[in-house]
Structures are given as structure tokens and as C-alpha cells.
Length: 136
Image (spheres, rainbow, N blue to C red):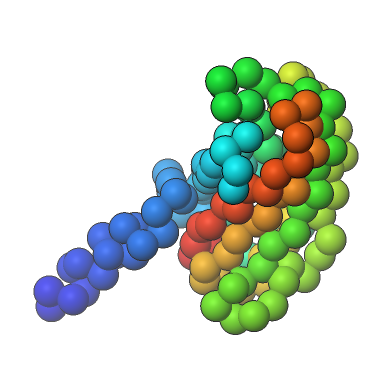
């Protein structure tokens, strides 16, 4: 009985950076490995479900919090615990506003722990940010 009550709380603690607001909705923030950039990523429509191909918003700022414009962003990801990547090849499609990038082609093939890796080449230099989260 206690395990059933505390398991959801334990799951949230281990997810760490992911912030599930409602079932299927999340926003994930991370600092790049060398501290050059801060990123926040979220599905554009709020849905992070298994199956459909999603568009994600990626907000990139520099270490001082200023929007990073004109960056080249590569996207990769997968399920580290399962040893496989994404079933698609997401790409940055546009920068509709300063420091906000749209990424098309994000798909999750199953529930579980996922990560998205963003290779950022911007004015401060090249760095990588890894966003980890759980798809339920």
C-alpha cells in the first residue's frame, strides 16, 4: 500500500528537470555542458505523447539570460536505458522570435525515460545541452 502511494512521488524526484504539468504535458530546462547556454524545451502544443510526430519549441539563452539568435542547432536523442535513439530525425525549421527555435520531427515510440540532445553553435561558441524527461 505504501509503495503504491509513494511510487509517483519517487518517480517525480528521479525525473529531475522534467516538469509534468498534466498528463502528456511537460517543459524541460537544462544548462549546456560548458555553461554557455540555458535551454528550455517543450512540445509546441503541450502534448508529449507516444506515437505522433511533434513540433517542439526550444528557447536558448546565453549565460546572462539574453536570447541567442541565429544559432545553428542540431538535435539528437533517444532512450539511454534502452540503448536506442529517436525513431525520427528532428530538424530545426525556423526561429519565429529571438532565441526561440521550432524543431519538427520529434517522435516517441514508447513510454519511459528519454533525452533530447541539442548541439548549439551560437555567438558564445559550440556547446551541448541534454534535456532528460519521462514520457508517460
